Structure formats: structure tokens, C-alpha cells
Image 1 (cartoon, rainbow, N blue to C red):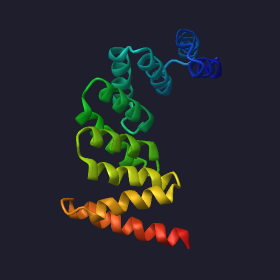
Image 2 (cartoon, one colour; image 1 turned 180 degrees about the vertical axis):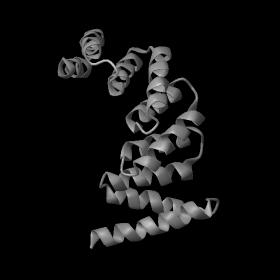
Image 3 (cartoon, helix red, strand yellow; image 1 turned 90 degrees about the horizontal axis):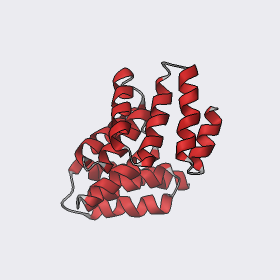
Image 4 (tube, rainbow, N blue to C red; image 1 turned 135 degrees about the horizontal axis):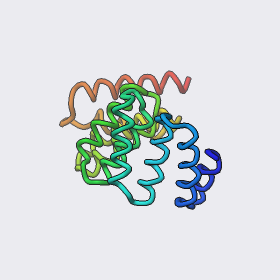
Length: 169
């Protein structure tokens, strides 16, 4: 039934996906990850209140569940709380630095806030982890060329440019 719920979700049959998932949750109560799956579907349906409630409950039950944290960040951003969303996306990158999509979301939020250079830095990390070395190089070069950027971010960009050059060899 779990697989069916995920297929229904991908086909945008969200009510049926919830019905299937609810049956799985009935047979496996206490599986925190299933609450996250339910919250994702609810968020896709636009029920952000219920999705937020379930995701907060899930994160409280397991603070190291980065799947729940990532989706909570999405919900918080959709609700207009981009500062909280950023904090949660940063938590995800701290625990899972290889999870490129979190860098993309950070870059997107920073861009919306008008922090274009900082946005380029995180989009560069996204592109690097995705193997898009030309784009990553361009992103990091833009950061390095900017004179109004944080020294630490500039230095990390320079190191990442050196890493990209080594990867190309």
C-alpha cells in the first residue's frame, strides 16, 4: 500500500494517496517517517496548517530526521516564514552536506531577499554537488569578484574553485 500511495502522489491523485498512506499508518503506528510522507501530501494539497503540525511533531520526535526538517523548511517558506525556513535548510546542510537540493533552496530564498552574491555561493554549492562544474565555477567566480562579500564566504569560494580545478584534471 505504501508504494501505491507514492505512485498516486506522483500521479497527483492526492486524496487516494492519503487514503492508501492512512491504511499503512494504521498498520504501522509509531512510524515517524510515515507522518512525514502524510505531511508532504497534505502540503501538496495546500493544507499547510496540518502539514506544519505533523512535521513539527515529527522533528520533535526525531530532531535528526533531516527528511522531516527539509520538508518543514519548505512549509515554513510557503507560509512566508523564510527566516525560519533558511535556518532549517542550514540545519539540513550541516547534517547532510552532500544533499544538494538544500543548497538550491537556500540560494533561492537568499535571491528572493535580494542577497544575490550569497545566493550565488549556495547555488554554486548546489551545482558543484550536482556535478555541474561550469555553472559552479561561474557561481564561485562571481562571489570571489564581489568586494562586499563576507571574507569567510569568499575564502571558501576560492577553495571550492581550486577543488573544481583538481576535479577537472
